Length: 357
Image 1 (cartoon, helix red, strand yellow):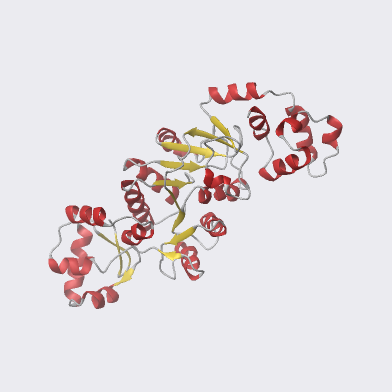
Image 2 (tube, one colour; image 1 turned 135 degrees about the horizontal axis):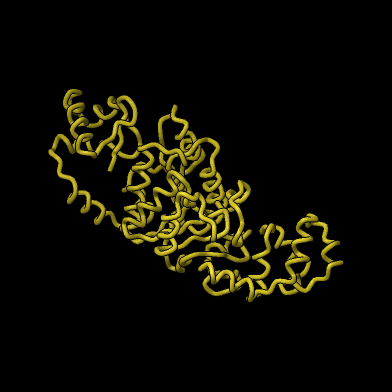
């Protein structure tokens, strides 16, 4: 499969470029053996790409593989056993993957968790709880290692003893963002860092929408935690829907810009995620262990429990909590204050509350 490594390592070429080359030449080996005159007549390549291809013919797969080995990077082509079947099912599957660590195993369950880079404490707490619950049930998390929800969910997953995979929009030898070097190293040890781009490829904006199809492609469903109306998370969600995958969105307040994207997804038919119980149920996992864990960790008086069970991921107003609990307003306000002091509830804006843990 060295010819596939040779082809996929060409700098400045994208999946569509490779598809056209393969349509014209039929195989990577034929591309490598092409003549200069043939290359000059290719109408779908830019002049810069023609020069790269002419020069790249002098490189050997052995030389390329040696450089990968020096950097600890592995490669697998779409023709090899071990290539993720979920990606192979995509219409525009990558012809090859470069990666650190490992790829998800065929039977490994994976869920994508994505969201805003500039997330709130509320979004952070949800990302952590979702990651912990998934990890406890042996479900791996796929995301983009970005600032905010992506990195938070992946770090929480690893801390809980789970496995996580980052799909990046640059070469596997480049950590982006650079501040996530320690997370990147840990992902390579307890999961993987995966990309379709060869080493040395810089993280330019064009790469990220293309990268997002692999995040959704590797996952059985996508969870969106906080997203603006125009964001990469919504691109991932749209791609997941196109791929026939489920999308779950955490709802938020109408006036919150970081909730606009999630609320929009819900209005378009995405699933609503308001509690860990809903997530576990959606994934077909028994709630027995989750409930047992909560009971072991939280001891509440009867009146406190009446307020606590009224809360979930979705911000609820004081008025709504009073109505749902059936308790006097003064008692509810006192209980909410006590629950906040115990770190169980957070007031995310005046008189709006969510579960913190």
